[in-house]
Image 1 (tube, rainbow, N blue to C red):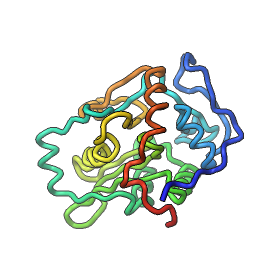
Image 2: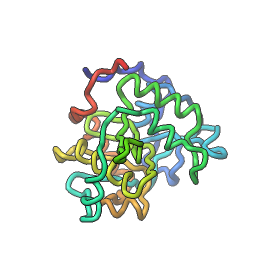
Image 3: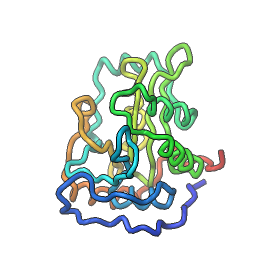
Image 4: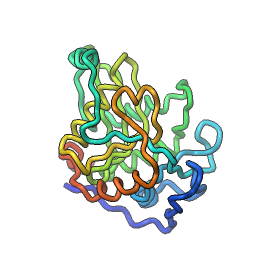
Length: 229
């Protein structure tokens, strides 16, 4: 079943692609229609206050971190590491988001209001999680984000066991990028850690062109299950 389409947002999220900073707007809500309008426009939410508190900011990095078809890199050591794990999709969305929102993490920004907003998106079939399980059945790592067509907006990832987060990205790439273009994984900002997996930076205008194609692509079958949970 296809995801339910929330009502369009009443707040315009359009912005000038030449805007000189990553933060392009402040305000609005986290209703499903607002979030989907934002992602389709090239924006994502993150609070501008302490630990992600209000006011809500809407971000479009001048230099965007992306993972593109044919560019995901898997090292030999990661191939060996994956053998110890099992993986799943949408099996424990709350567990993944809870681990990402752990108040003990450095750079914490996922507030209770953000958790609630993405839980609602999950219930509607738009938000998804990738879980990585250790040999003893505990949650070793994972990630979550929003899927629109062949586009996946990664929101956050975590790991409790070495390489578990990288395996989660690998599973995501297998779903979103396997068919080639227009598959697009957005990781927001490039980091050295993500760079080892093949993530690179592109300028905002290039990102928006890729985004326009990706959101009209085919939703990966793993994300196309029932929306009633």
